[in-house]
Length: 54
Image (cartoon, rainbow, N blue to C red; front, side):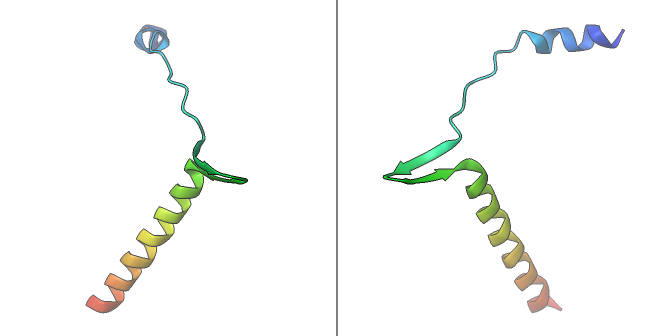
């Protein structure tokens, strides 16, 4: 019965997304690298906000 719910998902096309955002010479910036940086900056901002409000 559960395979009937997944059947429409099988027909959805999956877009090919390049893992490299920007390539400048030998340096390539990847999506996961940007994700790490954004996560670290958000955690730093959130920790700073918690310490300031405490």
